[in-house]
Each structure stands twice: as C-alpha cells, then as structure tokens.
Image 1 (tube, one colour):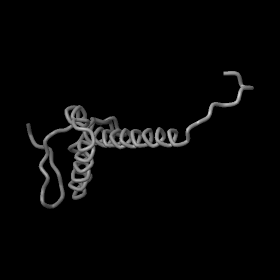
Image 2 (cartoon, rainbow, N blue to C red):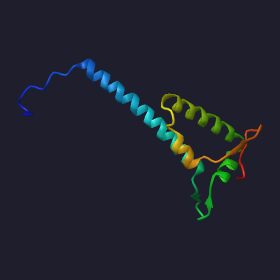
Image 3 (cartoon, one colour):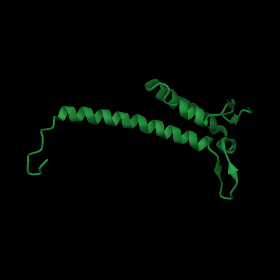
Image 4 (cartoon, one colour):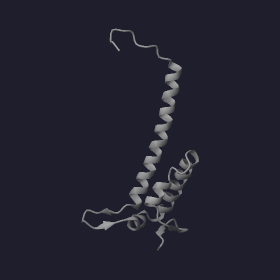
Amino acid sequence: MNILNPPPVIDIKQQTATTLIDYTRNSFDNLLRRWEIGMSLLWSEKIDENGVAFGAREILANLGTNAKDLFVISEGLRSYLESIKPDCTQDIMNKYYKPVTIHADGTVTLDEV
C-alpha cells in the first residue's frame, strides 16, 4: 500500500468484535499458563542455595496448614478451565501431579506410591 493513499475504511464494529475475541482467548491462555506455572512450582525438583535438591514434600511442609487452600484453589481453577475447554489441563496433570492426602488440619502430604 502506498502511504499517500487514504487508509482503508475500518469497520469499528468488526474491529471491536475481533479485539474482544482476542482478549478472551488471551485471558484463557494466560490463566491456563499461570495455573501450569503453579503446578510446576510445586511439583518440579529444585536446588536450594546450598546445592541441595528439594521438591514437593519440602514445599508442602513449608506451606503447613495453608497447603489445603493451595489444592482447593488449584482444583477450582482446573475445574473452571476444564469447563471452558475440556481436557485442556490433562497433559499438565499427567506431567506434574502426584497423589496426595489432604488432612483435616489443612496440611497435605504426598502419598507413597
């Protein structure tokens, strides 16, 4: 297009609809990505400042009685995401999730498998 030609007429209604679709898609993708980051933070092995490996067991111990809330909220987010796009969390669950026991006091422990 020659810059001296007038710009094409933009249908503002279509542009608004397209922007809304993009915004909605991006919102869903961002929520799914952030949920996956949370799963990764809990379930992936890490190295502490002394070079010692640690994982979910140590993180759950540090969460203490707040651990239950983490699982309740995470499951709520997963259910919400799945209600919009079925099976969208399955690969993430397969990659990270391990069986746990949620105790009445709010603590969570890894199940022995």
